[in-house]
Image (cartoon, one colour):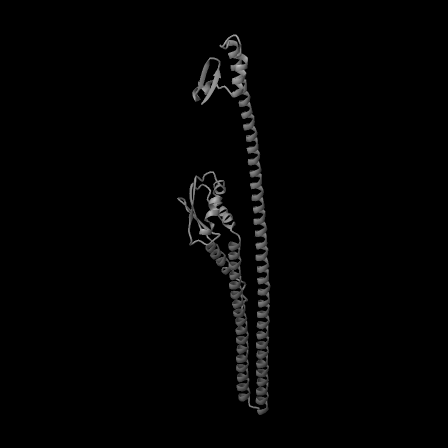
Length: 327
C-alpha cells in the first residue's frame, strides 16, 4: 500500500485503486509541482488531468518495454530451440553413421570368416580327393595284378593241357581258367566299387564337419553383433514390422537390456504404418538381446535371434552336394 501527499488531503491507495490509477513517486512529485500555488491549497482540474496523462504515458512506456523484452526473450528461446534441434539432428546422423560403419565392419568380418572357411573346405576336400585317388589307384593296381596273374595261370593251364595232349584235361583247364579269370574280374570290380564308396564317405564326412564349423562360426558372429551393437534391436524391430502392414494393436516382446532403447524409438515404429494405433513394448528375459517377438490380434512375427539362426542352420543343412556316381 502506498501513501501520497496532496495539499490539504492525505490519499491512501490500495491494490484495487492502484490497478485503476497508480501514481509513482515521480508522478506524485510532478503533480505537487504542477499544482503548487501560494495563493490556493486546492489543485485545479487542469493540473490533475496533466498528472493523469503523465501517469498513463509512464505506464505505456513500461508496458512497451515489457513487450520488447518479452519479444527478445521469445526470439532467444526460438534460437535456442533451433540450435537444440540442429544439435540433436547432428548427433542422430553421427549415430546413424557409426551404426552403418559398424555394420560394414561386421559384414567384412563375416565375409572374411566365410572366405577362410571356404578355403579350409577346399583344402579338406582336396586332401580327401587325394586320399580317394590314392585308394583307387592302389585298388586298380591290385586288380590289374590279380587279373594278370589269372591270365598267366590260364595260359599255363592251357599250355599244360596241350602238352599233355588230353583234350578233356585241356577243356577242363580252360574252363577252370575262365572261372578264375571271372572271379578275379569280379573281385577287381568289387575293390574298385568299395574304393569309390569309401571316397564318397570320406568326402561326406568332410562336408558334415565343414557345415558344423560354418554354423558355429555364424552363431559366434551373430552373438558378437548383438553384444557389441545395442542399436541392433531397433533395426530388428523395424525389419519385422515391415511384415505388419495393416496391424492396429501391437505388442513387442524384447530382452530386458533392449527395453529402454525400444521405448525411446517408439515414435519411429508408429511412423512405419498409419494403421498402427497402439504399440506396447513388453520385457521378456527369455528373448535374446537383439531379437524380438511381435504379436497382434492378426498374427505374430518371430524375429528372435535363436529362430533366425535355426532357419539359417536348416537352410545350410538342406544343401545337398553332388554325389559321385558309382558304376
